[in-house]
Image (cartoon, rainbow, N blue to C red):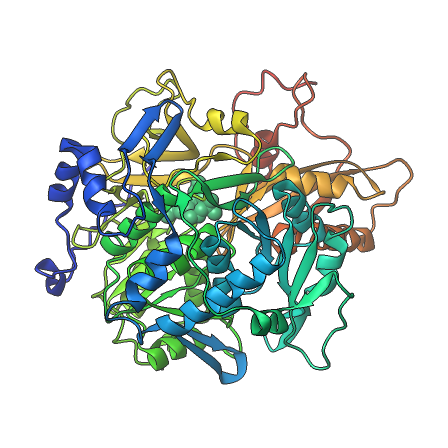
Length: 625
Ligand code: WTA
């Protein structure tokens, strides 16, 4: 097969001597020479109530970071700036549909967080209690997250696009005491009611004591006495000053659910100290967020990208965040570029699926706006294919802005592999492990393989913002650190490394499908389908798609006597939407008489996928005839 020549883009000369660049090799060398000293230096920029005894204690597969230290992440996100020069600096520019705008200075954010912290305390929320936040990307979401952290409570944010079953699983999985939500979310000129979803999700959610509801719509939705509380009233009644509660470095800061390969989602637990250091370090050194930047991370705060690079990272470095509820195509396909022009956005961090959508809509849209404020572009969530890289580089970055294709995961908490500003960029390749990370591509055994050979991405050593555990499933946590004979951390991604050590990601090696950058577990979709009375069995696979990376294709065996109608296809899709939310809905659904299975009864999705794509299914010796 003819292999196209690998293109290399060299950073614009303005970046060569720029103060934004930390020489990659030098920094990596500093890390390698003495990893603990490296992290000690980074962590020392931040404020700790009590110093650590050890930077790291590594007892495979368990790592403890900054042991014995005490801190509060909000003290670093708020007081550290409010008590210094950034008191009146804009922390958040928020742009809502129809030109609605809200601006929070660091001081204003600080005051709101404290009131919300007190409000939660008045409801009996204590250190370690879990609070579920089911809100769209509005400033109250940021306030609620920080308010939890302020009082040592553990937030678990659920993306507001999830359906009732998915929400219920996350609320009960985390054992949340309080749910914070809104009556509705605004989207594409309309509003989507959230309250009915929450009501359904709260059936069989015995740990929930109260629901706090932000009422944005007129007429105001009614509240159930005692159980449902008005967000605004609660804040108005709360005391002004709320002490930051010192937490141990190893205490959980949040739980964030991510799709699992079995039916149930995994509650990824991040610990306060290590997560704070990882988020701070990468926002400063990888995203190079600086004093005068206006930084836009388009990920919803309900995902890990929104947690680390939408909120915590930028607030830790004292940056200005731009947050918006606009979808990329409403009211028209120019809206995001207009926002960049209007707010003078300098760093724009988005997802390949959005870039491919913009490509399809044409460069006449970005060309209408002045994008000269941009200095850096970023991408995350799935591989940034070379065509999308080149379009992004040329039409948005105007052949001058570096592109960071950042590989990382909910579990890693921070960037792991990318091409740091200043290094030559190779479209299609994420890049190299960042200083602080020892990652490589290995075979099934965990041994190195020659450049150009497909293998597994493995991480050899712990890093500060690695997940602490999987909530109430430590066994599942240990599996992550059991790859090959050396017990590396496995990301479950296939990858290939070139002669220069650049890593290209090739997709998942497990039963997770990345749809438009979002993780969806095949098992979740299958169990949702099977819960419908017409379905006997179901299998779901990811099918490559030029826009979304993958789409979901489902194969369904109907129960005896059920007619395979077009209407039923529609009903089944709707059923999945209500249970799990729109992301998980199969784009294609076929009725079949049988499914390829192993003799032990496991569905061979690999065979379905190969057949779907007209490819050789490979080894089918375990297939049950
Ligand atoms: C995929 C998102 C290729 C990968 C931060 C990973 C990527 C999963 C990239 C984690 C990238 C993320 N190139 N693939 N730059 N970034 N992925 O937990 O399969 O939502 O394992 O975290 O997304 O998705 P998650």
